[in-house]
Length: 307
Image (cartoon, rainbow, N blue to C red; front, side, top):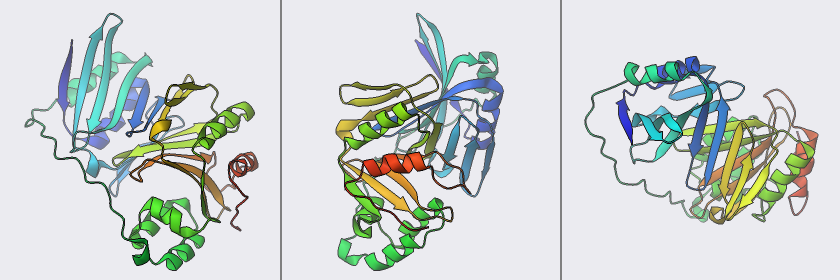
């Protein structure tokens, strides 16, 4: 048994009020990957079509134009009541979920149920979003794309570059050249996570959907395989990746003002980005040498872009 209360879509206010509840669990997922991170919602701000949570534990980049409805859910079981706030897009797909933990001020969390309770028309999910269809490769200015890629000064400029050339993300990886993006065996994601855990190399793990991106920064420890699932099972960070839905894995390098930045990126069969991994770093600092060494071990040949 349980209860579902519709909440008013005052998104910035809602995220800001979560801090008072203390330790929570943030969950973001797509069809192939689930990212769970425990911590406090701090450093919340909004503007320019974005919502940001930039605390040391909970790290989110939200796109509220994709957020359509939210509910406060209470689910009763023999272990007690589980409280959560769950946000969905117009198609009825989960964007982001917030769960109470053992460290949550439950009374403070429950105040959100009444503070945001809303009487709204019944939610009607729209038809599923159509899959993106890339233009034919021959219609893309591949040389211009490559030159723009080589001229990047910040990783955040990558998506605007794709938009300016009207090219899909995976399509751009294919067209840029193997010195910038190289396909590798899907199994290398397992190798990378296992090695990062053994060597205690801090990483950044990005998982998102159309409405939000959730980031973990830090070391990983327990890497466990269960059937098709590759899992990170740590006290504050869990990752669940369905390896059978990962169609391709790419080692990618982007120039920045701080030197080249190397990532590992997994895509599904429709070309959707599933998960990205980087070495842990802050803007203004160079990439870690141990991450770069691990990344190069996963490529079929060494690739590099000059600073």
